[in-house]
Every structure is written in C-alpha cells, then in structure tokens.
Image 1: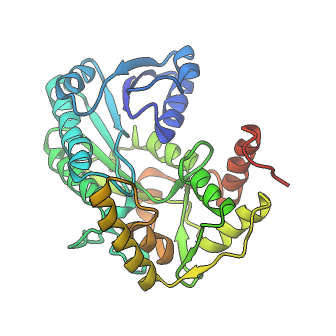
Image 2 (image 1 turned 60 degrees about the vertical axis):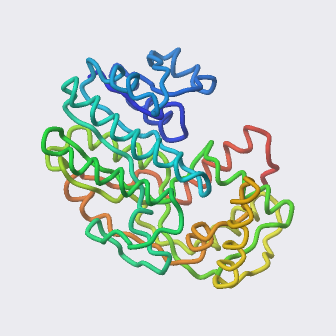
Length: 329
C-alpha cells in the first residue's frame, strides 16, 4: 500500500514507519525536520515536508494514498491554547479533509487515553468512559475535539482511533527529563507513591497500529492500548533510578500541595512565557491510579502486548547506555 504517516519524524512515528517499510509498504513520511530519520529515508521512506497548519500542503500529501496514519500532534504538558488547537484540532480536520478529497480509504488516528482522564483515580477504564467536563490542560482537550472530528468522519471514511496510555521506549522525551531532575535532586514523588498505572511500550503501540490496518471490525471504533500491566508507578521510577545509580530517596509532595504549587507556577508562566516546572495535569497524572481495560482491542484487533514493561524498561536503559548518557550498572 501507499501509506502516509503524519508525524513520521517523531518518537512513535519513526518506529511505525520502520515497521511499515519492513512489511513492504511504500511509506510517505510527513514531518518538518528530517535530520533524525536519515536511515528511514535510506531504507525507502519518501519525505513529505509539511506543517499541519499548512492545510493546502496537507491536502496535497493525501493524493494517491491508500491509508493515512495520523500520528502528528503537539504533545506537551504546557503551551499556548491556540497552538494546541491549530495543530491537534484544525490539523486533524485538514488530514480528514485531505482523505475525503483524494479518496483515501482508511485513516487511523492516534489519540490518547488522557481524553477521559478526570484528574482523579480511574480503574479499569474502557472506551465507553465519558469525556470529563473540565480539562486542566489544553492538550487533552484538543485531543478530545480531534477525536470527535474523526468520529464524525466515519460516515464517508474508514476511521479507527487508537488511544495509547503512557508510551515509553528508546528515544522518548520524558525519561531523560525525569533523570536529569533526579540527578539535580529536583524530582519529587507526587502523592502517596502507591498509585498503579498502565504503561505502553512503543513497539506495542506500533503492533496495535499495524493490526488496525486490516482489521474489518475496527472501522468506526476506538481502542485503548496498554501493556495491561498495572504497575506501581513510583516503584518503577525507583527501579530505573537505582539501575542508573541515581538517588532513590525522593522527597514527597501530597497531591493537594502539588496542585496548589502547580497552579501558582502556571499563573507565573502565563505572565513570563516560561515553561512551569510542574503543571496540574502532570501532578495528577503522577499521583492518581490509572488502569485500563483493553478487552476491545483483544477482541477486534487480536491485540496482545509483544513486549513487557520490564523488557521495555531494559531496552530503554540499553539505549541510554548506547548513547553514553548514563552509567548503567
């Protein structure tokens, strides 16, 4: 197939492009900076220089394409509301319109489990969970609106929505930041440290996306994707810190105090333009139970995680070792 991957230069997009190339597809890799994907280009990926805010270019990129994987998004805990909506909402709208204009058969949209996160403990959450009334960050709000656009497009386009939770793996962005904060002794445990969460190794997300390419029962549906391992988050963090010979004794911030501090930091950031060290959204994500039910993906996609959390952490640490960024015992 001729397949377009938006966000093909990003963390998840690169792994997906590689997997599609391995399966013999002709892959068009949409992005803005191709400096990190030279090997993919050498392997046959076709670069498409395009910003999601350039709707005319997005429409043109969809010409002659059979399937679009819409992976691109502005993913950050802090930013301008307009940026989130221009990229995540209006950009998604442009992708869907490009699909309609050029007769693309299927659009597989990467969303996020955060669209149903309430800022409180959530256990065994399924796709039927309602969107919350209030979002503490424009990021999940923008992803909700993008989802609604994709759902509305199912009348004239084969759409599938994939909602991964807490993607991690080699070359992700959150782990190096966490480790740097720990090295500077600025990494605090938020909450009681007993909260259980689901994480998702990046190759498992790619596996689910590949299954979505053909699954007939998936059309018009939404699927949560995780490793289906309800791990104690802060135990996992301490395990990583221990392996990297970093301090594991973390100072603790109760969630109410963390939320108060984060709110003050956000207000200051609005005045200064700087990025706050902590946001209410991130504080809640780090302190609350968040476990999910993936039975729908098992039923319709035949999805099963192919890499465990422990194996994924090992692969991630090995990658850091290869980059000579950390001393691993």
